[in-house]
Image 1 (tube, rainbow, N blue to C red):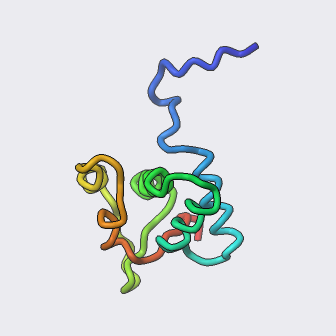
Image 2: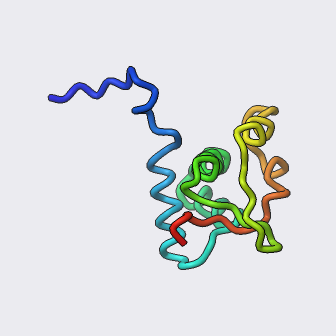
Length: 109
């Protein structure tokens, strides 16, 4: 049996890989960028906390695996500092994300 020890931080996933797979599948099925309502729908459908989904998506944006596009079409890079500021009150809530009403998609698009 293989010992899966994560002593080296570089081996630790940077986000929830199961949630990443879920949102990626949703994107593939929809065949167009996702919006906050899509993530809320996944949250309700699978009884997953909305903030856990968004935490994963935001981390993927920070690490250039996904991108966020403003409503005017400009790609917005989200920094670690912005991410941390969104979590100041603890868990993410809709108000933390109200300015992020654009589109979300993998960078491979």
